[in-house]
Length: 210
Image (cartoon, rainbow, N blue to C red):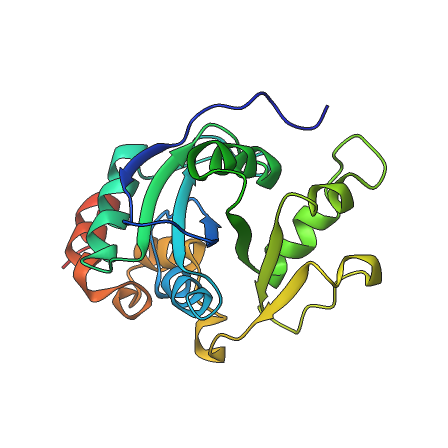
């Protein structure tokens, strides 16, 4: 079995109304960057609402520098008054685990589109789930919206009907939370990589000089 039993999302902000097409953007948001929100805003061209998900555990990384509460605080501040964004934490870290939590919260008639960059898409498609063709079967539960990061993503032929290209400006490809943290540690400019509204929060949480 490659996913756990269904548990509930914990919402910190929920958009009103029914989402027939729900974009799901899972990330550590450590910290939230302009690239995160470029993905989310681009996805709104294809979906009704976007759910920003902070998994409590990722299978491929550990958290550092900021607590869960601090990361939620930053995401809430960055979202501002955008009515189509929701924020929640999930118990699962795999897309299929988060998908099951979304189906529990939104109903199985909501069409799910996970939003990610091509680097993340490569990783999740080829992840060892312990079963042959596991990810192909997962695509029965959700679809992908994939933005280029360092090159256009070409999904395997048998998955192309469920994986869609998401156009995001090239200027966001080099922006990452890892790069923001690196620049803060080295005292290099970083403010241009995060939403202006959260720059003071980022400086306080990560100990950046202002």
